[in-house]
Length: 193
Ligand code: AMP
Image (cartoon, rainbow, N blue to C red; front, side):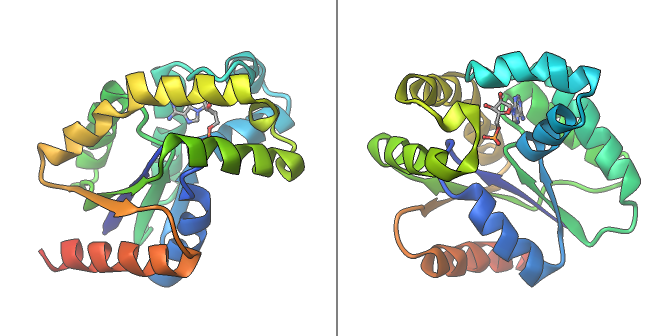
Protein backbone atom coordinates (compact mmCIF):
# COMPACT_ATOMS: atom_id res chain seq x y z
CA UNK A 1 0.00 0.00 0.00
CA UNK A 2 1.00 3.59 -0.58
CA UNK A 3 0.08 5.73 2.41
CA UNK A 4 0.98 9.38 2.18
CA UNK A 5 0.63 12.13 4.75
CA UNK A 6 0.19 15.40 2.89
CA UNK A 7 1.31 18.02 5.34
CA UNK A 8 1.41 21.79 5.58
CA UNK A 9 -0.27 24.79 7.17
CA UNK A 10 -3.82 25.89 6.25
CA UNK A 11 -3.75 27.27 2.73
CA UNK A 12 -0.62 25.36 1.66
CA UNK A 13 -2.49 23.62 -1.17
CA UNK A 14 -3.03 20.19 0.39
CA UNK A 15 -6.59 19.83 -0.95
CA UNK A 16 -5.59 20.77 -4.51
CA UNK A 17 -2.59 18.44 -4.57
CA UNK A 18 -4.59 15.61 -2.95
CA UNK A 19 -7.09 15.65 -5.82
CA UNK A 20 -4.31 15.22 -8.37
CA UNK A 21 -2.43 12.59 -6.35
CA UNK A 22 -5.48 10.36 -5.72
CA UNK A 23 -6.12 10.29 -9.48
CA UNK A 24 -2.57 9.43 -10.40
CA UNK A 25 -2.00 6.75 -7.77
CA UNK A 26 -5.57 5.45 -7.28
CA UNK A 27 -5.62 6.35 -3.60
CA UNK A 28 -8.42 7.20 -1.20
CA UNK A 29 -8.48 10.79 0.04
CA UNK A 30 -9.04 11.11 3.78
CA UNK A 31 -9.39 14.75 4.82
CA UNK A 32 -10.47 15.11 8.43
CA UNK A 33 -11.57 18.71 7.69
CA UNK A 34 -13.88 17.46 4.90
CA UNK A 35 -15.18 14.63 7.12
CA UNK A 36 -15.94 17.11 9.91
CA UNK A 37 -17.67 19.54 7.51
CA UNK A 38 -19.81 16.66 6.26
CA UNK A 39 -20.79 15.81 9.87
CA UNK A 40 -21.77 19.48 10.34
CA UNK A 41 -23.80 19.46 7.11
CA UNK A 42 -25.64 16.34 8.29
CA UNK A 43 -26.31 17.97 11.65
CA UNK A 44 -24.87 15.06 13.67
CA UNK A 45 -23.99 15.38 17.34
CA UNK A 46 -20.30 15.05 16.49
CA UNK A 47 -20.67 17.82 13.90
CA UNK A 48 -22.42 20.13 16.33
CA UNK A 49 -19.65 19.66 18.91
CA UNK A 50 -16.88 20.17 16.35
CA UNK A 51 -18.43 23.25 14.74
CA UNK A 52 -17.79 25.60 17.66
CA UNK A 53 -14.11 24.70 17.75
CA UNK A 54 -13.68 24.81 13.96
CA UNK A 55 -15.40 28.19 13.69
CA UNK A 56 -13.05 29.48 16.40
CA UNK A 57 -9.98 28.27 14.44
CA UNK A 58 -9.13 25.65 17.08
CA UNK A 59 -8.37 21.95 16.70
CA UNK A 60 -11.02 19.41 17.63
CA UNK A 61 -10.04 16.75 20.20
CA UNK A 62 -7.68 14.01 19.04
CA UNK A 63 -10.09 11.15 19.85
CA UNK A 64 -12.74 12.62 17.53
CA UNK A 65 -10.54 12.66 14.42
CA UNK A 66 -8.78 9.39 15.31
CA UNK A 67 -12.20 7.70 15.57
CA UNK A 68 -13.21 9.04 12.14
CA UNK A 69 -9.99 7.79 10.54
CA UNK A 70 -10.32 4.41 12.24
CA UNK A 71 -13.76 3.86 10.72
CA UNK A 72 -12.64 5.02 7.25
CA UNK A 73 -9.74 2.54 7.30
CA UNK A 74 -12.13 -0.22 8.34
CA UNK A 75 -14.56 0.73 5.52
CA UNK A 76 -11.85 0.46 2.84
CA UNK A 77 -10.02 -2.84 3.41
CA UNK A 78 -9.02 -3.25 -0.24
CA UNK A 79 -7.66 0.27 -0.84
CA UNK A 80 -4.45 0.70 -2.82
CA UNK A 81 -3.54 3.28 -0.19
CA UNK A 82 -4.59 6.54 1.39
CA UNK A 83 -3.72 10.21 1.29
CA UNK A 84 -4.10 11.70 4.74
CA UNK A 85 -4.86 15.40 4.32
CA UNK A 86 -5.02 17.58 7.44
CA UNK A 87 -4.35 14.52 9.61
CA UNK A 88 -2.36 13.87 11.76
CA UNK A 89 -2.31 17.39 13.24
CA UNK A 90 -0.80 16.51 16.63
CA UNK A 91 1.89 14.05 17.71
CA UNK A 92 -0.66 11.84 19.57
CA UNK A 93 -2.67 11.65 16.32
CA UNK A 94 0.48 10.55 14.45
CA UNK A 95 1.15 7.86 17.07
CA UNK A 96 -2.47 6.68 16.85
CA UNK A 97 -2.28 6.52 13.05
CA UNK A 98 0.81 4.30 13.20
CA UNK A 99 -1.01 2.00 15.61
CA UNK A 100 -4.14 1.87 13.45
CA UNK A 101 -2.14 1.05 10.31
CA UNK A 102 -0.14 -1.60 12.16
CA UNK A 103 -3.36 -3.53 12.69
CA UNK A 104 -3.41 -3.98 8.90
CA UNK A 105 0.37 -4.64 8.73
CA UNK A 106 0.73 -1.26 7.07
CA UNK A 107 2.52 2.00 7.75
CA UNK A 108 3.06 5.50 6.40
CA UNK A 109 5.21 5.49 3.24
CA UNK A 110 6.18 9.15 3.48
CA UNK A 111 5.17 12.64 4.55
CA UNK A 112 5.12 15.26 1.79
CA UNK A 113 5.25 18.70 3.41
CA UNK A 114 4.21 21.76 1.38
CA UNK A 115 6.14 24.79 2.60
CA UNK A 116 4.53 28.22 2.15
CA UNK A 117 5.41 31.45 4.01
CA UNK A 118 2.86 32.83 6.45
CA UNK A 119 1.95 36.05 4.55
CA UNK A 120 1.18 34.02 1.45
CA UNK A 121 -1.08 31.66 3.47
CA UNK A 122 -3.14 34.55 4.81
CA UNK A 123 -3.53 35.99 1.30
CA UNK A 124 -4.58 32.62 -0.16
CA UNK A 125 -7.09 31.88 2.62
CA UNK A 126 -8.72 35.31 2.43
CA UNK A 127 -9.12 34.78 -1.31
CA UNK A 128 -10.51 31.27 -0.79
CA UNK A 129 -12.92 32.69 1.79
CA UNK A 130 -14.59 34.78 -0.93
CA UNK A 131 -15.97 31.59 -2.50
CA UNK A 132 -15.48 28.67 -0.05
CA UNK A 133 -18.29 29.66 2.31
CA UNK A 134 -16.06 28.40 5.14
CA UNK A 135 -16.56 30.52 8.29
CA UNK A 136 -12.94 29.85 9.29
CA UNK A 137 -11.67 31.45 6.04
CA UNK A 138 -13.76 34.57 6.57
CA UNK A 139 -11.49 36.88 8.51
CA UNK A 140 -7.84 37.49 9.13
CA UNK A 141 -8.01 37.12 12.94
CA UNK A 142 -9.41 33.58 12.61
CA UNK A 143 -6.88 32.68 9.94
CA UNK A 144 -4.05 33.86 12.20
CA UNK A 145 -5.46 31.71 15.00
CA UNK A 146 -5.37 28.64 12.77
CA UNK A 147 -1.78 29.42 11.84
CA UNK A 148 -0.89 29.69 15.56
CA UNK A 149 -2.58 26.30 16.22
CA UNK A 150 -0.54 24.91 13.35
CA UNK A 151 2.74 26.34 14.61
CA UNK A 152 2.25 25.17 18.20
CA UNK A 153 0.49 21.81 17.86
CA UNK A 154 0.94 20.60 14.27
CA UNK A 155 4.44 21.66 13.20
CA UNK A 156 6.04 19.12 15.66
CA UNK A 157 4.40 16.31 13.66
CA UNK A 158 7.03 16.92 10.93
CA UNK A 159 9.73 15.92 13.38
CA UNK A 160 7.85 12.73 14.26
CA UNK A 161 8.16 11.60 10.62
CA UNK A 162 11.68 13.01 10.23
CA UNK A 163 12.76 10.69 13.05
CA UNK A 164 11.42 7.80 10.97
CA UNK A 165 13.25 9.14 7.85
CA UNK A 166 9.93 9.71 6.12
CA UNK A 167 9.86 13.52 5.93
CA UNK A 168 10.18 15.31 2.56
CA UNK A 169 9.68 19.07 2.19
CA UNK A 170 8.57 20.70 -1.06
CA UNK A 171 8.33 24.39 -1.94
CA UNK A 172 4.58 25.05 -2.05
CA UNK A 173 4.94 28.28 -4.02
CA UNK A 174 4.65 28.01 -7.80
CA UNK A 175 2.47 26.46 -10.46
CA UNK A 176 0.11 23.69 -9.30
CA UNK A 177 1.58 21.24 -11.83
CA UNK A 178 5.14 22.06 -10.87
CA UNK A 179 4.37 21.32 -7.20
CA UNK A 180 2.51 18.17 -8.24
CA UNK A 181 5.50 16.92 -10.27
CA UNK A 182 7.82 17.49 -7.33
CA UNK A 183 5.40 15.62 -5.03
CA UNK A 184 5.33 12.69 -7.48
CA UNK A 185 9.13 12.57 -7.55
CA UNK A 186 9.22 12.31 -3.76
CA UNK A 187 6.48 9.67 -3.70
CA UNK A 188 8.16 7.57 -6.38
CA UNK A 189 11.47 7.81 -4.54
CA UNK A 190 9.92 6.49 -1.33
CA UNK A 191 7.98 3.80 -3.20
CA UNK A 192 11.30 2.55 -4.53
CA UNK A 193 12.76 2.15 -0.99
P1 AMP B 1 -9.03 21.78 7.32
O1 AMP B 1 -10.14 21.57 6.37
O2 AMP B 1 -8.00 20.67 7.28
O3 AMP B 1 -8.42 23.15 7.21
O4 AMP B 1 -9.66 21.70 8.79
C1 AMP B 1 -10.64 22.64 9.23
C2 AMP B 1 -10.78 22.56 10.72
O5 AMP B 1 -11.22 21.25 11.11
C3 AMP B 1 -9.51 22.79 11.53
O6 AMP B 1 -9.24 24.16 11.74
C4 AMP B 1 -9.85 22.07 12.82
O7 AMP B 1 -10.75 22.83 13.61
C5 AMP B 1 -10.61 20.86 12.32
N1 AMP B 1 -9.69 19.72 12.02
C6 AMP B 1 -9.47 19.15 10.82
N2 AMP B 1 -8.59 18.14 10.91
C7 AMP B 1 -8.25 18.07 12.21
C8 AMP B 1 -7.36 17.23 12.94
N3 AMP B 1 -6.64 16.28 12.34
N4 AMP B 1 -7.25 17.45 14.28
C9 AMP B 1 -7.97 18.40 14.91
N5 AMP B 1 -8.80 19.24 14.28
C10 AMP B 1 -8.96 19.07 12.94
